[in-house]
Image: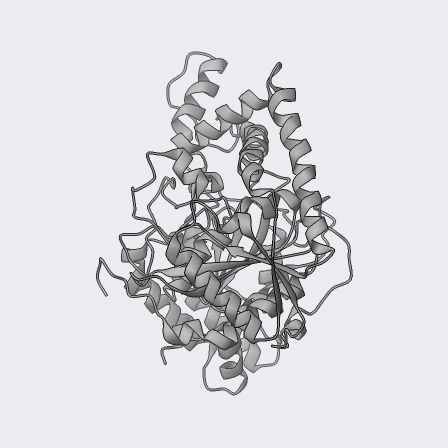
Length: 492
């Protein structure tokens, strides 16, 4: 087996048994990036030379006993909206094309404290606004399963890099499905933690009440390992929750007998592809066989969730992106006559179409005369959505839905139709609205060989429940052993 095909926990085992060195592992990933990046275009900034140098240094310190720790020397990729000191943080936007952060995000500090190796900053939809990674200013990332398809978004670079074995795991961010949907499209595992479990300090904000950082990994065990590292209270983030630390690895028992799983019929209705539905029904039968109790329920939030999400997300985006004005550390237009023109031209030239669209929509719903009709109403519906989920979790442990209504679509297929692109988030946005944890795991492929994702939603701060449910299913169907990306439509 090629080194880059191993999961992180397998790499840890091989390092422990001295079957591999940190330098060998890092070089294998650097070689893989050099081989596949030209096809996939998952990175905005690669740090391959720095990674090799760092690997040699860490290897020497591990051998001398100066460094200890299970994650020392393990490579990782980081989404380009997470601040990294001394390294570009662009949010895949012309607006921040040359921005070098003077500080690290809290999650990046935690990675550095463990002496992990950053292989680079990963491509994304501009300012995390999009579902296909086509709104990036730098490149359109391609899906490793089929290079003519999108990898999903906004964490498409992170998911594609993991799926193509250019990084063993990665960090993404999820505002309305931006970890889970690309994980579904790329056949990997994506976890969106409960709002407040992972510090958002140093994450460039899109919608502050919805954004959450989380892991994208090859399997569920790796997801639990990375969550163990990044979860925890942070005094620099006022939305971070102070609660006892959990060991999510211990939750992976492989036993789900008696687990109560709810199947909301609204998430299996119109608009969900038949092949996706059929694969989900097969997964439901697998859960029954494994001893879970499965019942169909009505969760009447789906029809309201999408509109609610886009009103709240765009309103918060219009506020958060006000700081990018051409005055301080952002792109500045070359020619202007006065201050007003400087603002106008810098923002017009620096932001892409999708970002402008959402700023305009957000400013509109917050404006005098429309605030009560749209933004206030959306916040009231948000409470209803949260209450619906709370009611469901009084009786059930897990809610099972598709991650996306379809498999990955073609590059350019939906980029001219924003509403159609927004509808691709129908299964994921309600999780962010209610602040719940959700995980996407592959449950099979369609007739064209493209991965299908299954979403498991848990109650607040019950990550261990959905991780174990995902792990037990994963052990049963062994997706990674049976299916691999084929890089169709390009060089092998």
